[in-house]
Each structure stands twice: as C-alpha cells, then as structure tokens.
Image 1 (tube, rainbow, N blue to C red):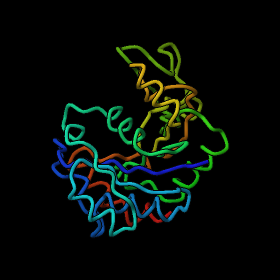
Image 2 (image 1 turned 45 degrees about the vertical axis):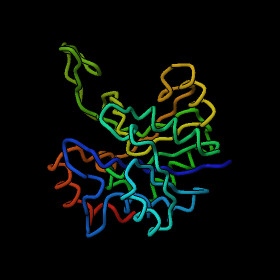
Image 3 (image 1 turned 120 degrees about the vertical axis):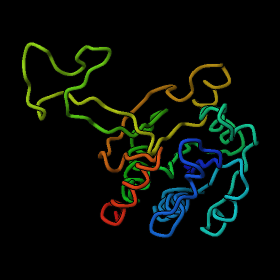
Image 4 (image 1 turned 90 degrees about the horizontal axis):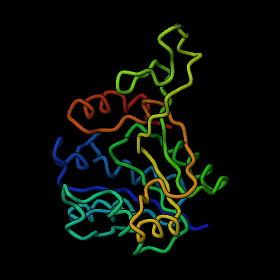
Length: 222
C-alpha cells in the first residue's frame, strides 16, 4: 500500500498572519510537522504543499519534497477539497495522509498509530476526532443529555468533534467524488481516530499559538 504524507501550508492566512511560519521552540510550524512525518517512517514520501515557493527551502532542508500548487489554490476563496484534489491528481498513491502544521501538539507516535489504523481498517476517509464528555447543545436543544435528568459527565455519550489535526483519504474514492461534483471530504466509508484535546489543539489566532508554545515542551515529545 502506497501512503504519502502531505502538509498543507498557505502564506495568506487572515486571522494570524503567516502562521505556518510561526515558530515554536525556534522551529517553524511546518518544519515540526515535516519532521514528525519523516520520523514516523510510515510514508513513502512526505510533501509540503503550498502556493508560495518560500516554503520550498524549508521542505528541502528537512528532507521532504515540495508540491507547488497553483496560485489560485492558495487564496481565501480556494477550498481544501480543491487543493487536495489537485495534489492527488498529480501524485499516484493509495492514500494521502494530511498532517496539519497548525496542530503542533500532535506527537509523532500518534501519527504512526493513525497510519496503523489506516492500514488495518482501509477506510475511504479517516478523520481525527476529540471526544467531548460534556453536556452539549445545538440550536437550544440537548445533543447528548436530557433536561429532565442530570447525568454524570463520565456517563454521557461523547460528542465527537472533528479537529482536522490529521486526516486520510483513499485517492481513488476522493477523486471520483470530486470529479462527480460531490463532497469528497466525507466520501465513502468514514472511520474515526480519537485523539485527546491537546493533540487536537489547532492554531487559528494568536491566543492559540500562545497556548501551543506554552504546552509544546511538555506534550509534544511523543
């Protein structure tokens, strides 16, 4: 089974400027992700996928490869489905594993475990989730509890929050759905890979980055 890793990184992030180049422990976020993918030894190749060639030097210096996506797939209008499909159209593989650099607290050991599950279960889509064992509501209504009784949090059915720290897609299923104008992100048989809430911590704004910088020395040594 040919499995490749892909770390997406665009330069034009809006809420936190140039966030993929933000440093934790003196290393850019994208470099952290690339090193963990390479260290895992689970991938036939590891790619940094960006519209900006400024990332190419980082990829090559880390021993990874660089995929230069078209410029229009790096702007705010481009969707993840579009740039993943473009990548898959240019790289033969059975599966692509997308590892987000903006989830820097995901340890290398969890990447390895994720790929192990992928190989063993062979889903079309594998999503990372954080299980929330708390009372959750949607549109004013309970999701996993009832208003007429109090349930201890450990006895609740968890709400499974998709966090995108790490995701995998079967190439053939994804491209077939995309080319048919369907939603490729959730195409075919979907399986879930649970991670803890720190591993699923994703950087969107400066406060998220500050939290990751504080926790990284403690949590990211797996």
